[in-house]
Amino acid sequence: MNKKIDHIYASPYKRAVQTVEGIAVFRGKKVQIEKNFRERKLAGKPVVDFDYAIRKVWDEPSFSWEGGESNIAAQARGVDAILRLLEWHMDQRIVVGTHGNIMVLIMQYFDQKYGFDFWDKLGMPDVYRLCFHGLKLADVQRCW
Image 1 (cartoon, rainbow, N blue to C red):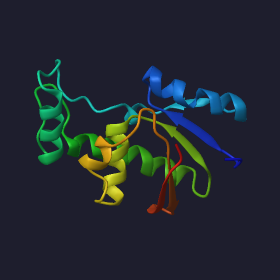
Image 2: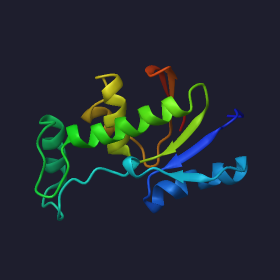
Image 3: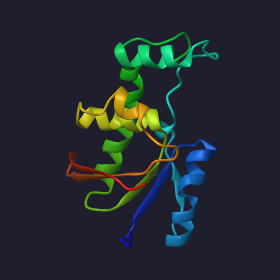
Image 4: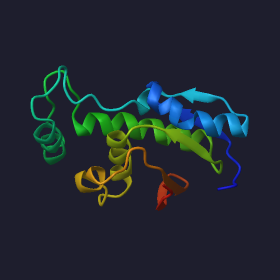
């Protein structure tokens, strides 16, 4: 893709920053950290059965494991961040390096077809291009 990129943001987690560093260097841009793009915290301590634990929070969006974050809470912070960036950078191209769970929760806010099954099929890493008209999601394309 040989399109102009105006801004690059990433979760503060090292792997998210590393994902966008190459394009930042290539485009001569600085990676700006956005803490609300960090991955959702599933629980305060490791869960015994990850598949069960992750399915439960998707099946019950207001549920959270002890020390963890519900889908509703994680989605709210992710959506807040993306809406803020869309307002600040209207009609500009933004790259966001984030994590699968929070990415799909953000996408789900704009279109309910994005949920657990979509998340479960993501590659690692995976790249999606989201096109917005104002604050409305207009198109999603997998680029990876």
